[in-house]
Image (cartoon, rainbow, N blue to C red):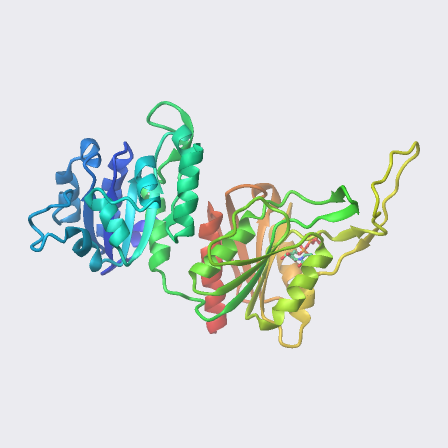
Length: 400
Ligand code: CTP
């Protein structure tokens, strides 16, 4: 049984908007998933969307009238553009075309769906679907950035084969993935009122002003944890090594370079925190006597002397009034044995472990959680999904 079929959206009121893209057929399946989970789905289609899929199909699947017209006579006072969204918990536009994103990013309202978007009071999520060049065009990227800044949640798109025969970024997420995103929007705010501090990414230990020692951590898992913590209602601070990732909305980010910088940034903030989650790949050593000028090439060997870095997680865990501490461990072998030993050595209640060769730089991972009750396997999934499961586990442990 898939996650979607077990989940409940009982009583949730969704306005599902379709715009004109081939992916419109996937929204039929999406509607079915929502209905099966108990949601109330009202469908609004643009004129172009009706060229791709018939309103009758969506009417049958949603069990409700489908709206396409700003001047729909079924709405008594001619206020369809206001009324159809007022009783909704959330609006989702899937698929959202490049044209539609451009429209709502700029506040245009020349049909029913775009007018509903600008007149809404509820959350808006969009699932873009378009050709790879359309997606990566500067105009679309600008519009997506505007929408994000306005608080619109952008789901996907994903990379893959496209209906036009090209391959690349722009495919709409699969119905199951969009369904999971909405489930998380409706999820209870398990960490409401909690302050969460997260470390993420690699550290960089300078050798001289232009060189240093670092590692291949992408920061993706740590950023996913920060995002999931915000979704769960927490106040989140992210202490980050160098990454090229976008800061999740609502997260306060502090950029650091070396492990010692990271330790200082953590130590000044950790006393105000309820939960500390150390996801960063912290270098174990730094270079003794890093040079302030660039090292010149010489003839002989060059030796670097390395001294141990502070163990940030162990230091936090040792504090007299330590927050709830979560560690991450990337092992290359003997996962179970090493992970439990590490959890005990660092004296932390929870450790999330994975096999390094299956995790670094990827968008998915598989984790095993180790706590005082044993181990809990989280099967391979996108990092954001794992992050949500991890935080649900943390919230459950906090309640005990
Ligand atoms: N950690 C930390 N400060 C360090 C080293 C690690 O906060 N100086 C944190 C990481 O963020 C992670 C966990 O501790 O949560 C990983 O610990 P550990 O596996 O001990 O780090 P490794 O150096 O990978 O240990 P080992 O080399 O023994 O596998």
